[in-house]
Length: 226
Image (cartoon, rainbow, N blue to C red; front, top):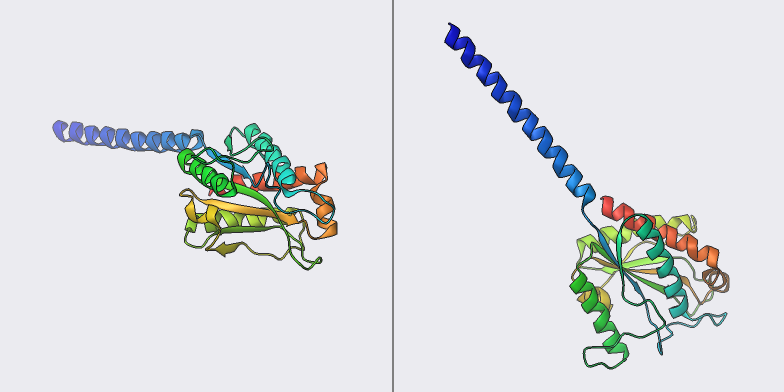
């Protein structure tokens, strides 16, 4: 009888140890996920001799892109998120042949993103259209990327903070070189239309640029958390 009691007690102790071990394991794994370093690539489109689109107010897209990207970079660093910028100055990236061409520039951006292997790459651009009345931020993703689609939809939702009346949706794309060639999930954020006078004036405003940056950061954080 005594041996049976001792055996039962031993089994209970063993079961308790197994339970505690599994609980600790889950706790440690959870913390490891929370503490894992996340890297984001920010890609301010155009630069140097490539101004991108020219606004109706003569604002150059390349300048707006870089200003917003720098603001996003600063905010992400406050969140302890590592950031890699494809450019930090008004320059065009050079290809492997050392030539500063639009083709070489795009290839260099793709190579940087693929080599960095970020959780997400965010390319910042401004839009344009032949009809002046068209406006609103919109996010693009590669049609065959499920992660890209998720990131774009989350980002599109975050950008509603700029204009709750914006009914644009995240849009799939098969042709953009950057989206097709990058291996990590990549999205293109068109922050607004430089062809629309009201939006073009907003896009050059420092406070509005900060609001865009805050919305982009919220979108990035929401995607990472998911």
